[in-house]
Image (tube, rainbow over all chains, first blue to last red; front, side, top):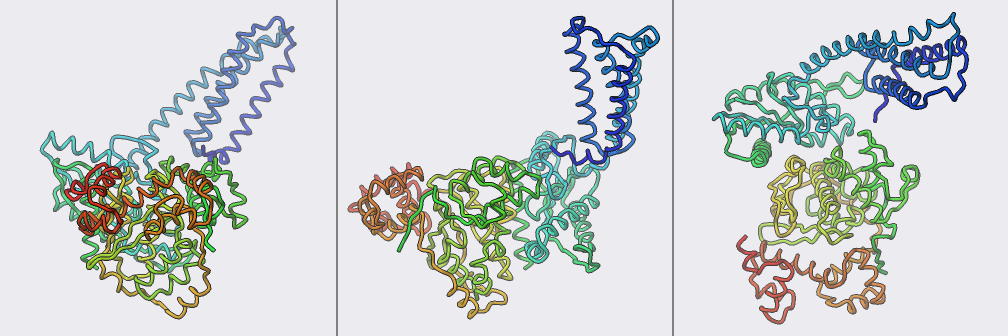
Length: 303
Length: 333
């Protein structure tokens, strides 16, 4: 697990600590201890469990989200619920004198408020997710699987493309359709790596991945294939259209002035790109092998 | 004096492969302990001292890696990165080779410094040069040996790419079936790729031997080579294989006499590789026979003669036992 987000939320953790400890101190100051034999241990176990669970939810919410409005709302809602549960739990061990009897009355009030706030937070989260989905538009189609994301480029990996190709093949055999694929390869990438190091190489891969994404349409899908190769799926596209898009990508990358480190000196990478149109007659394995070989041959002929 | 080792002796320099693998994992957020689990290696020792590891330890790390989908490209990536920084002893010589022949020769003669896990049998005919790689530390075609072949191939290609202006085509045939990460093969290897073949063979045209390297200096190469010590230590399998190929040994007793260890000890050492003398003998001869038939087009008579079989039926029977098919079946593939 990755807990790097937790560092951002120091303030929220302080609030959590203050609120919980104030609740505990306040109730113990006003209340009197009940003899332990009065306690209903089933109740205690259940309530302690819920109190603990709300704490765990708060922890995981904070561990998986950056700071922001949505996080604050979720936190606030969970915190109020937590206070309610905590009061309920303490109640099992304390009796309050008549002057502080209101404490028993209000103990369940924070929870509904907390739940309303959390619901609002969840609605905002829904909207936020919608925006993120829009951002992912060109790297994702209908299906989300985080284990297929390529670590370096941020695109999906070849595994995801294979799955999408299978879908596309099933779809077009029923509908007499067609699709095109682009495959591109960074020229002299191994030399670049030797010269500037693997970390710079990864940066270049990431930049090129972003450029490819910018130059394709909504509904197209770009993935990292392997090493310095990328692959783009263009559904319902003839070869001519695919060539046009290939041209756009090539032009865009030719104008990328890659900077390594702090210097202003630019490196202009170039790519080899190959477009091919496919029907529903082949398996996705054959298609990928064929496309990859075409690109290798094209590079060879150009050399 | 020739020395032999088995899978449990600490022979392999850690910076060669394991450090590169663990570093790659670290870059991807995988804790070193997860990759080193079960290998009895501690990360601190690995980075502090130049320690040596046994094959068993190395194998364990590779097994850990092949289970992680995040590391599916690890073999090719690490292979590409090994040269030149990780091969600090042999890299200066390789960097001064004048052409591909010289590169091949240095890799071959100093293979224990280049990539000790893979040994290569080289053969030439009129048009082609063939490399038959085999793992020096295991007999099986398992995930680990596949991984090592991948690293070795990526390393070879990266040396070529670094030293030459144009990479020659490597036509690769693999004795295993198509792996899930086949795209790594397609993107990293120049040339055709076939799986489910009777033998793993890398073929390239004879013409590539003359391809010149950029910025070479023969006297510097000689100087660096003269500083290298030829290490006369081999894995048990490796030494016996070369003796079998040279036709010097045919039985365990002959082998033990040649190596200078008692038959019982040799047997025990072979057991650590999960094999015995007969299985080793069979696998070496199978490799030779399959190669001669499918790549060199030898007749049964010629192959049988090369392996000093007394008569053809005998050879055909043995061949059937090794491969499950007759020589003529193989010719039809």
